[in-house]
Image (cartoon, protein in one colour):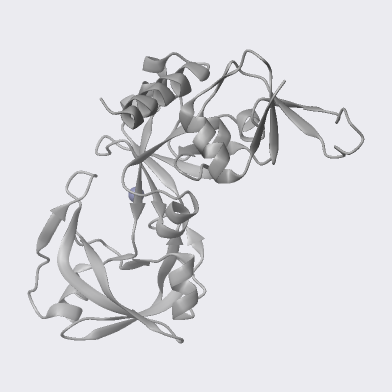
Length: 287
Ligand SMILES: [Zn+2]
């Protein structure tokens, strides 16, 4: 095994040990995070309008939620300022047509899309959809989708949450982010997955697969486990931060916002933690 791989494994194990729960319990609490790119849901009537009479969507790939699919079909969405082409249509057909974009997309299009949960499109933003055979102007239907978690009733019991509840999620990613006001959606049909949009995914630096965990309101406001200590010499005017856990892992370093961290003598520092500190320009000071 090469050195880097060993270091990565050690880091993983120590990160798990640093958490209050046991590794298996921690694994059980993981929620996969999926980043949804801009997309369009169409009604049967609008599918015919955009693609021609009697037209049906062609599935391209299955989505994680049962029976949902990304279609071969793409459309162009148009706002007062600009247009975005190659926007994926998701199937199957829905009762109401809905366009889901990121806030970055909305700005580009010049559309004031509100932050809404999927399906709640009353008084949302107007948008034009252009297909190969026609176009439609929607008076309402363009939204920025609010983050949410799909789960089965079994999962809801396991996480001790209910349909419609808003919770907080800490994303474990290269740039960890805590998402607040994440809505729980429970259905027999749902598979466990958190959905965020591309702006949120980029904020957390999520690339490929990632997961999050539900955290309590207190945890949301909790800083990393350190205490502040007055500088011992006059020239060190800044406050020093002393690390409080036995092992300093890469994960912990990534959460740090101070330029310097005091480490008690017995603190173990992983190789990846040292690398991360170097990258972030954080000085680790042995006591
Ligand atoms: Zn979703």
